[in-house]
Length: 412
Image (cartoon, rainbow, N blue to C red; front, side, top):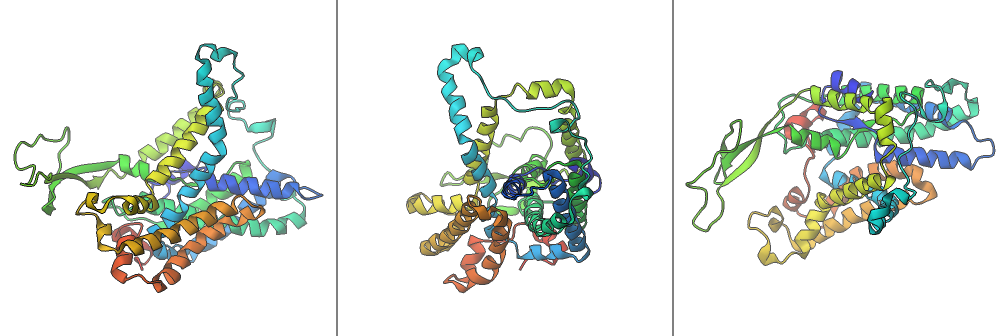
């Protein structure tokens, strides 16, 4: 559903939409809260109203151009908050991965093991043999009002998570030519949220790392000389084999690859959504039912470690522990005092720790608020600390290129 809507109607179809870790955490937290009540309402009816309120807020925000707030979002907020859901998923599922790996000791007797597999349902049918349409309007009026603040929390989550996913998918490393449309896309996100409430399914939004991976797979690479970055060329097919002028006198390579374009189209997003629809057919549901849960847990474990590996926080930590003699001469962090790099990393780790910690408490429903607070902290608190403006430009920067940020008023 999300793939069809965003590939056909959105301004930026490169952003892959689907069910993310944060919305799963939010849905589970709401369920746990409802189970503590004496007169527990029907969960799907309550979630339907949560999604309905959130959808209205999406439409109002889109009409008021609220996405302009994205001009304050920098890589600080992304590096601090993006790895959190993957790390949480990896820690939650690591026990399944351990069990799956332990089973390798019984390689010759796998058929005798009682392996837990993915739960599936019938073809094109929801779980629990319920009808597709959720009649959430039948919910008692008291719970309709209670659903409103939960809808606001969901709106905050999607405002940050989806728009940041879209920003990263249009990052400064991608030479895009077609302009974005954050307000229009956020309006359509409200529509998908409302439809998800009607169908009783988790609401989709921009996916990380799938969205930037999708853009990366469509990049056209060119070749240029490091000493002449303004000149570049590219050609289809295998890269040419250079036999002369590839290295300097010191042995440093002078030729490097760099992105010169992106295949901006709508087909790949629609195709992956169509393939997901194929997986809902009977034969593929049977195949999915044979997949051990440990395999899926291992996937989340890999995604969690990979999110940490590619994070800007990890990059700065590796710089701090690396022998200064081994740091490349072109490393931008060389322009920053090591004490200031350490201070900036400490602030990022505090934000990351706060995001992770709140998800482990009864206050987990408020974790989107903590994520959103990272933006004003970077905008108004960090500049008051002992950093030079030139150092902050190296340590942090806009998430997307000036071409992309122009649609939200430019970067701050």
